[in-house]
Length: 154
Image (tube, rainbow, N blue to C red):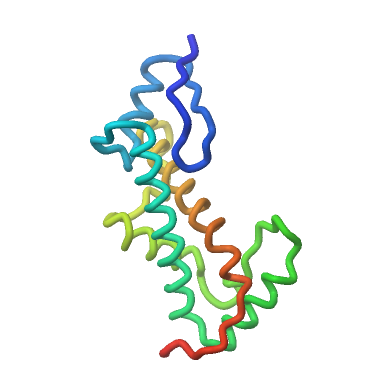
């Protein structure tokens, strides 16, 4: 038996589970689940959090990189073809840690970045956080191609 639990709030995919236990594990693992009246409320909440993480990520990078480093990163990113899965911020810093910092500040908790083997709740939490990271990065990508003309206070 397949259970359709609805549209995923970040990517829009439909989650399909093979049984009630798998569905319940997913429900328990949703770290963003709250007392939402509707799926639309949950979607709005998650979209707002993704936007906030994206904005904070860009701000963190702007503080970590000098203006010259930022502009070089932006030039390299702009030279990449559309849809490229590379960001040249990694040429100057550990941008994953910048995303980690942004996520932690916005969500008020550390992300679940390591799955613990077969624990389905932990794996689902990990997967959900990685989806948030990816969605925030997708929103940030256009801004990571823009050169800055002002100096960020170092």
